[in-house]
Image (cartoon, rainbow, N blue to C red; front, side, top):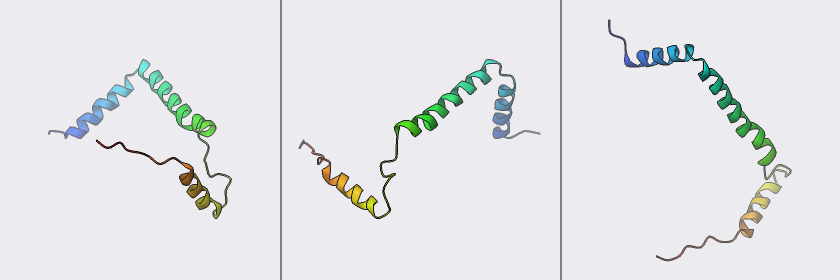
Length: 77
């Protein structure tokens, strides 16, 4: 009986991951780096801009920030 293409792909990857030696170590390194990039760096460097404001103050802060920004100019072509 013939198996479907997805089943063959699944078996290929399953057997490949079972037989890995250095691959597992490299995947662990990749996952740790992703964790550092998204969790640690986000917590320290990308603070929420509206964190200390009440619900009533947030719209005013956003409007004030938009009014302070310079207008984007486009050059005529």
